[in-house]
Length: 195
View (tube, rainbow, N blue to C red):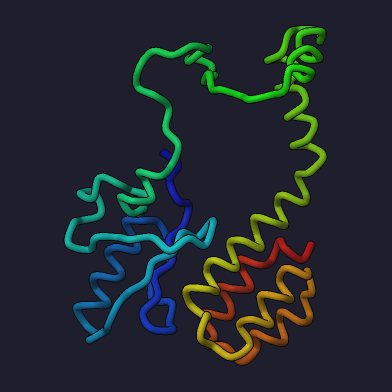
């Protein structure tokens, strides 16, 4: 399971905690003890997804150190527990690919076989689109966070349009009047969208 590098915790429009899962749980528990606050929203600091954290369990007791909800964990792809084809020690997992007969014929004629050629094609495409993928991930992360935290704030729709148009000036103009913590986090998630 991939552990979230950073968790963000918001109470109303204020960032009250930021850090590792255990740190955030402790800080939020202390904050709740000393403040009469409503709901606390948690976000994965790497992809902007809102996550559920059960504060009744201790940091080491939750069983899910990333803080992801049970539903999110259930929907993530998993390696089958049964023995499968491939080279498990190398991380190879056999899965089905549907291609037309002409595609299979072309792959069969390639040096190293179909699997080797598909891996090479995928690696080439990953290298060629690495910059675009980084921009898209940044846009999507910022959009997820903004939708949850700023969806009702004036300028939200315009900020999203500017984000996907890669218009840094427009994005900053639309977010300038937002609450400071929301604005700073939204801009942090969006940073790589403007490179």
